[in-house]
Image 1 (cartoon, rainbow, N blue to C red):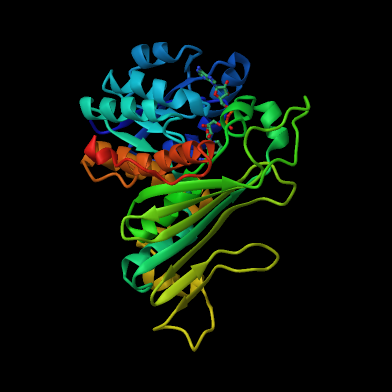
Image 2: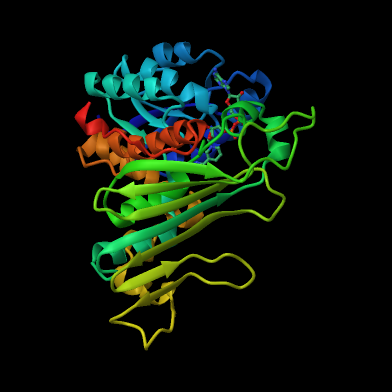
Length: 366
Ligand SMILES: NC(=O)c1ccc[n+]([C@@H]2O[C@H](COP(=O)([O-])OP(=O)(O)OC[C@H]3O[C@@H](n4cnc5c(N)ncnc54)[C@H](O)[C@@H]3O)[C@@H](O)[C@H]2O)c1
């Protein structure tokens, strides 16, 4: 196989965000699109010149001849759609999170094991330039022994809840961390370990939806995660509080260095490394780009830049294409996807049980 034929489901929503990364990749082809919304699907397909369109997902899987499906539908559909593709030997790249229950996690892990096809979770925040740079510096050992990190996803979406109604149930209709992967994904890559236990607590409720109902999710929740080597990660999720967005706040602390993402108003990406900084003064993270950033980020190709987000979207699809065609390892395969997704799911059980600490299963043992 020289060229991978991609199908996208949820093509009139988030799925469309993958189009350019596919069409820019010389080893990929955008073959078929599926969405329940017929009108938007027709407009979207015409815009990218795709003629194979479907409103029925199984028809796309069975009739279009695709090798790969990108699942960009609402959260509760990710697992069932992945299972349908995997049992047909069609490779899956799924939007986040991978599943919405521990039972679904078990089904998905079993299906990936049984299938000849590959599975990747499209955790795109791990493909952001500063996050890739911090990962490279961490891998080179300049932070020393890492033992503390933070991630925050602050995205007020009370109005969006009413437009994309599935969010009102699956993101703000459940207490605990319902959207953990963007915060936890980069941080776990930096620390190079998984979460073994989690505890979640919240701030209580200060807002109501347009029907006057209280959101089941507390306005701000914090989950504390204990890592394999005894480190601590603090993840804040807030989809309800009135405030400016900040979906990309992170920090990392090690014995010989630390990093902090910007929080707004002129703040910068900054790093302190014992071996590189004068005294206790920060340096701009970007000063280390030339030395540590992988070549494909430093000198992105034309096609990479066309795909957007500084090339991250292109590289995410490229990692998947290479895994399928060349057998290279997937940075976000089923177990890495589960490390992130299950921590969030267990945080929901923790807060429901009065903020107790709960073990996070390691799916490599399933
Ligand atoms: N990684 C990111 O940065 C990022 C950003 C936004 C959304 N997301 C994720 O993407 C997913 C979709 O989010 P969204 O904001 O696009 O939602 P959305 O509701 O705007 O779009 C979902 C699309 O899926 C279609 N759809 C629903 N059920 C379908 C079915 N059975 N068959 C075919 N099509 C169907 C809908 O018609 C719609 O066009 C969610 O899981 C969300 O978590 C990720």
